Amino acid sequence: MRKLFFFSILVFFFLTLFLMWYYSFRDFSLGYFVLGILGVLTALGIYDSLQSKHAILKNFPVVGHFRYILESISPEIQQYFIESNTDGKPFNRNLRSLAYRRSKSVNDTHPFGTQRDLDGEDYLALRHSIYAVHPKEEDLRVTIGSEFCKQPYSASIFNISAMSFGSLSSNAIKALNLGAKKGKFFHNTGEGGISPYHLQGGDICWQIGTGYFGCRDEEGNFNPEKFQEKAKLPEVKLIEIKISQGAKPGHGGVLPGVKNTPEIASIRGLKAGTTVLSPPAHSAFSDPKSLIQFVENLRDLSEGKPIGIKLCIGRTEEFIEICKEMVAQNCWPDFITIDGAEGGTGAAPLEFSDSVGLPLEPALIFVRATLEKYNLREKVKIIASGKILSAFSIIKNIALGADACNSARGFMFSLGCIQALRCNTNECPTGVATQRRGLVKGLVVNDKSERVYNFHKNSVKAVSELLGAAGHYHTEELSVHDLVKGDEMIKLANRYFPDTVNTQV
Ligand SMILES: Cc1cc2nc3c(=O)[nH]c(=O)nc-3n(C[C@H](O)[C@H](O)[C@H](O)COP(=O)(O)O)c2cc1C
Image 1 (cartoon, rainbow, N blue to C red):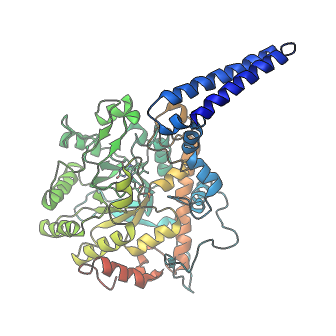
Image 2 (cartoon, rainbow, N blue to C red):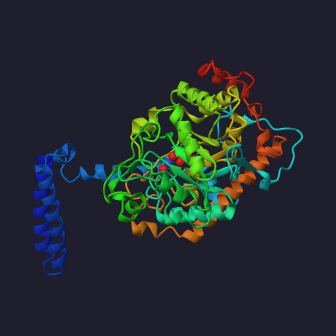
Image 3 (cartoon, rainbow, N blue to C red):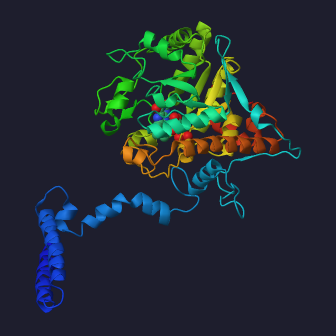
């Protein structure tokens, strides 16, 4: 190939000289132009042949670059030319466009019938009733706050899942918070802490991860005084201790150096430009006993705001131990957020995203049944997250045991995310998951906050329509028996957790 390259350069060189001579009376500059291009290609070819980093370029000088160009635009080629309506990953085109249409409040109906294979193994659906009713959308709220909580919170059944300022842009966070304010639902800060962009007046769930951003001392340990200061903010309605997240359970957080700008560093108390790994485990607790004490401590320090924990289920016996400890100490969190292994992230090692943790369905069934077994189900609210985007996925997860649902990537779509799969590079073309000013300014806050509001409003409306079709007035009435294949869900649960699951789910 290299011989061919040098041979073609020689041929083109003499051809160009010939053309220059031939056209010398008409357009001499054209010859120089061609010679210039030839010079650049020759220099590139010589460089490719001499370098030793890329075998493809050494063996195929110049033309080898096409491989890298095509590779860099493969997500776009895949999305625009190859993928069908039902096979895009992680979210197929049908689901993405549902989110876009609900966000724009335009026609969200679907033509000509389903494109799904209803005879397939994974078909799951709602069992509708002959006696449909009309539930009120505004009733679809749930109170979070057990008897120990002095400031219970009335939450929407659908809220914005944790995403930090840092993984998302300032404009994205502002738009999410303004949308949440208008729609009266909550916005989880993510483990990056509370930034000024979160304080647009929307209700906040302040998440505290292993880095204790916003409430840490110089060594990175939990600092009660700093916690108390922030917990008092009127916007903070709920506080969530993040134990793990479905896309990377046990890995901790990753803030790539390119996204750790001076501003983010000052909000979090870090050194700008460094890649920051939140440790995989908390330093404030190390076993069920100290975890429950930490919950109680935060509740006291926050003057009785609802305190929750977020985790992806891995070792089920560890969760059972935590429940036993709740009973022993007569103290429990006000809510538990269960994140499925299918959940999203800004950046995570592939092995953690693909191969660690329980998916949402079995995890939810397990958690609900375990709480029931220890008589905690009435006291602790369950929030579910993990690829929840359509109204049916909200209904399904509530039927399986959740009280409310959170969505991260659904709300990213409402901000204009096109699933470009570049969250980990700081190159997000839509300005959602990047800190580059030039890209961030493309996300217009007022326009997108309206879309966030619409997405929530239209999703809850669609939930109420499905609920009504099933003959229910409130999501609290849903159970696994509302699902086609509900009996198979029970079998699945029993297969995973024979000792803990109640067969009467
Ligand atoms: C860009 C991005 C950033 C995230 N940051 C956090 C975070 O800071 N803390 C956390 O607990 N989960 C984080 N998550 C996970 C989500 O909160 C959620 O648990 C998960 O994505 C499942 O929701 P989804 O499938 O609706 O995206 C993040 C997800 C995304 C997509």
